[in-house]
Every structure is written in C-alpha cells, then in structure tokens.
Image (cartoon, rainbow, N blue to C red; front, side, top):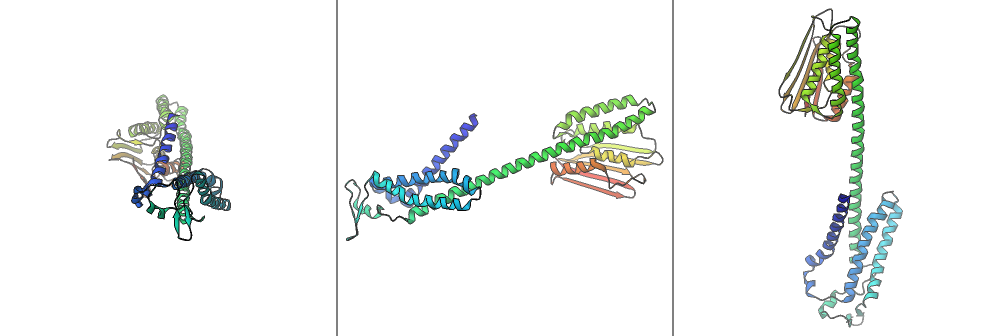
Length: 364
C-alpha cells in the first residue's frame, strides 16, 4: 500500500515538473528579452487561462477521450471531441481573461494600441501584445495541437506497453501451465516402466525385490520433492539416474554391457529436472536383449556452463522396435527444452551401424 502511495506521489511530482518546464522553457530560451519587460494584467490572465485549459485538456484527452473513444475505435466521436475542445480553447480562455482584466485596445485609424490605464509597463512592449487576437489564433492552435499530439502519443505508447506486458504475462502463465502438464506426464510414464521391472522380480521371488523397492522409494522421493522446482543441482539429477540404472540392472543378463560415466564439475551447475531420464529409458527399452550381446553407454559431462549428455545403445532387432517412435517421454522432453532453453540447447539423434545415439547440449 505504501509503495502504491509513493508511486502516486512520484507521478504527481513528475507531472508538475514536466508542466513547469513545458510552460517556462520556451519563454526563457526563445524569448530571453521578454524578461526585461513588464506584462499587463490581461496578458498574464490570458497566459494563465490558456495554460490551465491546456493542462485540463491533456488529462481530459488521456483519461477520458482516449479510453472511451480512441481505445474502442470510435474514431468519429474522438475526432469530433478533439475539434470541439479546440474551438473551446480558442474562445473560452480568451473571454475569461477579459473578465479578469481589461485588454489593451487597438485604434484601427492609426494602428496603435490604446494604453490600458492599469498597464505600467514600457511602451515599446505594446507591439508584442495580443489583446485582440483572432479566434483562429495560429499560435494557440499550434500549442493545442502540440499538447494533443504529446498526450495522445504518450497514452498510446503506455497502453501498448501495458498490452505487451499483459500478453507476456499470459504467455508465461501458459508456458508454466504447459510445463507443469509435461512434468505430470513424465511421472506416471516413468513409474509405469519401473513398476513393471519390480513386478517381474516379485513374480520370480527374487532377493533383489526389496532393494529394488528401496531404490524406487528414493526415486519417488526425488520426483515428489526436487521436480517441484524449475532447476535442480546437476549432481542430484545424476544420482537419480544412478538409482534408475540400478533398478534396471536387476533384469539385465551378462549379455548386456552397461557403462555410465560422469565428467566435470557436476555439483556446480543447475539443470531442469527429468530431462535426461526419458533418453536413458529409451536406451534400455531398445538396447537390451536376453538373446544376443548388446551395449548401453551413457555419459554426462560439463564444459564450462554447458552440460553435455550422450547416450549410445545397440538397437536390438524387433518387429516393433522403431527408434523413430520413442514415446511421449521423448516428445515431452523436446517440448520442455523448447520452452526452458530456447536457443540454448542442441539435440541430435543419429542411427548408424545398428547403434542409436542421442547427443544433447544445454547451456545453463
């Protein structure tokens, strides 16, 4: 509440300073000699009335006419309102000034000003008096149009900036919602595959069932806690992958060669959670065979602020084993990379000599 009040005070002060500068600088800069002359009461009244009307018109235009007509594309009503304000400005302030102070007269026969008894200034200043300006005074018209252009331009730019800010906030909210949805899809997808592995152990009454359940408990704890954050330490993600691989080992035979290595300062960087696990799952899904030799190699290393992930697996021949169809997990990772690391990641997949390679670089 205090910040809002302080902001209002600062805005009022800024507007007041801007108006003072706007009305005084032209006289001080362009007409420095005017400071040497006195000014009549009528001239002073005219200047004050004109300036007050211009200030009122500025706020009438920015606070009422633009939101009510221009913003709603009621062009005709807006133009008519501005024209009406112009005619009022050219007539009303002049008449009010006459009521406040009697203007200097003008004798058309000798084209001399008739001195106002109340005026005590120097005689040669009469030539600058404007007591009998025509209604369509070019000076006042230009001044009015200047205030109109300035106010309308500022308001249009402010409304555009506000619209852009709202659009960005809406877009960010949409992205956050989409990211949350993608994360929620990763969890069931991962648990489905892991529970299948533990079920296989339980069916054969393996002694590895209990340790596997403990590993699953650690994995669940990680998913329920760490993945609620946008970024996690890379070391935590590596430990999570270690636990997952340990769960996978219980169903592997001697025919599978498995190698998981890390390199660099993995404890110093932060990374979005669950980005690598779909590729690891994919390697085990398509690279494990109980009948023939196969291999899986996974490497995570850091180069400066860049995390490099590489997964290479032997493609086990199967009728339904199409590496192009890698499931919702891989597709979700691709989408998350686009949202969280736009222009800061490189993902490539290659299939050569019956080996499938995933190479991912992320600039943190």
